[in-house]
Image 1 (cartoon, helix red, strand yellow):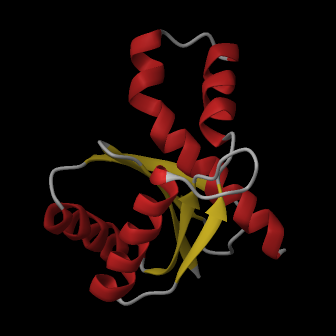
Image 2: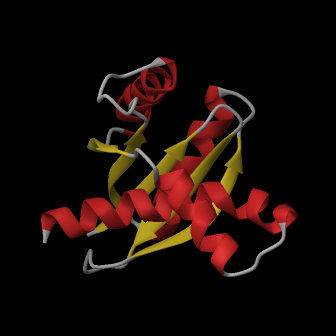
Length: 136
C-alpha cells in the first residue's frame, strides 16, 4: 500500500511517497501551485504513477495546538483532494517539520538556493515518515 505525503503551502506542495511496505518515506517532487485544477491534476498523475491508496497531509498547528490560517488552508485543500481524487486523507501534525528539514539541509551544508528548492519535499518526507512510524 503506497501512501502519499503532502506538505501543502501557498506556493508549493512538497510530495513524498512511501515504499510499498509502508516503512520508509522518500521525497519525490515539489509541485509549483497554479490553481486548484492544476494542483489536483498533478496529484492524480502521481497517484496513477505510484498506485497511491491514501494521502497524509501535513496540518500546520500553532505551538499551543490550535489551528491557524495555514491549518485552515490545509484542511480545505485536503477536502478538495477527498472530493476530487476520492482516496482517504489523513491529517498529520506537522509542527516543526520545516524547521527540521532546514536543520538537516544545513548540516548537509547545502547552499541557500538548494535548500529553498528542497525544503517542501523534505518536509513532506518528515510528515509521511512520522505517520508511517506511528502506524507500525
